[in-house]
Picture 1 (cartoon, one colour):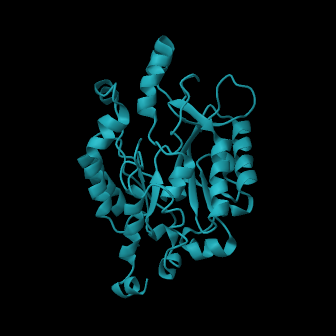
Picture 2: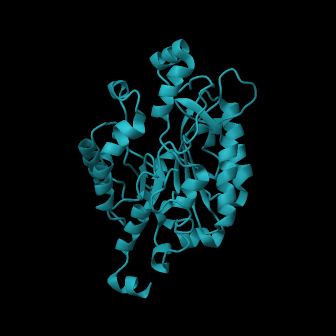
Picture 3: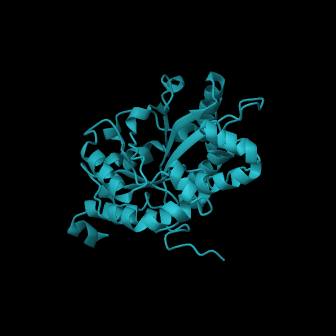
Length: 323
């Protein structure tokens, strides 16, 4: 039986609601928030066509070798092992979302995607909403940042779905500095949706992508990654946006070739986790510090716990004694 590390389970299901009043009064952009990269890749469909987000040579290989090639792709497409509910229970509050229609399929259905098609977006949103209805003081960031094979009708369908599923839980676009947990609780808002597409620009509940920059290192080397994370944090905008530090390594074609059988988890992530987590543990939230930190395979370490506990650094010794 697979064992889960401490911190996985529902121990962090209410971590935002449990923060001391000093922190719930701070702008959310100054708190440390754990997130997941390619958040919905805990299941991908090997029998569906290869996604339109893939390069031409990958599509060719998948066509030639069908399910065999797709099984290799699964090893490199799946960056999370936990379902939505499990990620939320573990404390993950930021979700990095890539979506696509299925070319050739009638209707406007939208799916999560990373190389291969995953679950329907509607199913994932309902799962999130169910969690939020049970945990009224928890807030999630939904960052829709990549769209494939989607025309205007698909975008209208997805935006309508978001409004229908979350309704009054959606927080309208406003000044980032005014967004505190206290404010969100008072208004009963629990969802901040970022929609990186012009079709959403006149819709108040859809925040523009420039309010949540997420610089991407695009490297397989942990040392280069941590240098990049340091540089982008120093250059973080002083006002007007949240900030995502992507503590992730990205496989290249030759990395996939070398680690063909093992996949992303074994070949790239596990061996470099200590370096990445050492960087995370050394961070401090606050005015010039980290905000949202994302990772691959959030269950491999006590990732969410480590990020959440960084918020204790914002409390004085006296505050900590009073807790």
